[in-house]
Image (cartoon, rainbow, N blue to C red; front, top):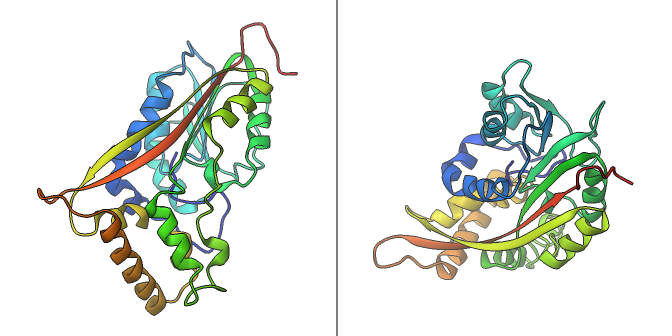
Length: 276
């Protein structure tokens, strides 16, 4: 459950400790998402893109009688997640969210938190996940909706600038990586689910030197730096940090505010209705 890495294995190695530097801020959207899931006594729960596992463990705490499985493609994240594993109740497995599928009976709850923005054309994937649900089952997803915000737009501009173009074009953030809320509503209702879709902009109050750079260093910046040697990575990071300081100036009290838009979509298959 994190936006720290794309679902496929690649050149970038993902750092759970860097990601967890902002664990509190990143956990809040997950709590807001699950607050709209009204599953009573689910038996099988899956978290697709579980990351380092702390939030997946909260699912096992919420539903102590459920079998909870976390799926992720990052070996580093899965190694950290093993600290939360509980034999017979909470397990973590390696898998790409694009092609992983459950064995056996249908699922009662499917969760994916801040992962689908790494998957181009993920509307079809959502339809497939909806097909896994048992009658009365729930599908809950959250995606960052800030791909046109300065954090991402400035990085895209850098990657496509004359200095870096050719090496970084294909890892530049895509401004169309996620759908708008109405499109997610259409996807879920088209899959036969009752849908609840909304968006929220969080105002994260950060501290320290270059706090916005610190935030993105655990997420969108990592695949970019993985393409560069140490010297070029330092050069691009310096350019990006300077641009972020201008876009997100420090306030008189020393803090920096990072507005962060997120899109939420929760679908519920009515009791007595099986997937088509």
